[in-house]
Image (cartoon, rainbow, N blue to C red; front, side, top):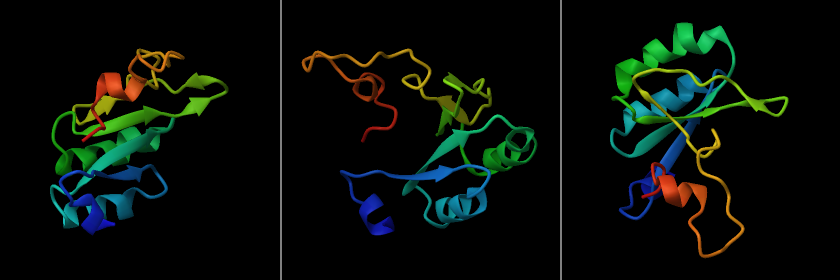
Length: 114
């Protein structure tokens, strides 16, 4: 996977959360510049107290995309942190269009696209 993520026309995203955080960060720091990080934000204090301070040691400002988790049809309150960029499509800032000629939410934002 690292070889594919290293290609100029590809991006490799490591999904991290409280269950796989350690292995994701290890892969991220072993190949600097290859991987990007996506945080599945959970509504618990472990992220704020443990994971985010550690994340700030390896990631730069607004370098990690955050996806607030869904709970009962609603999103967890987005965590505000220097390293996080909260996905605007998940937060409803970009609406999914039925017209094929209009940009899709991720095409409008482009944060995650190569």
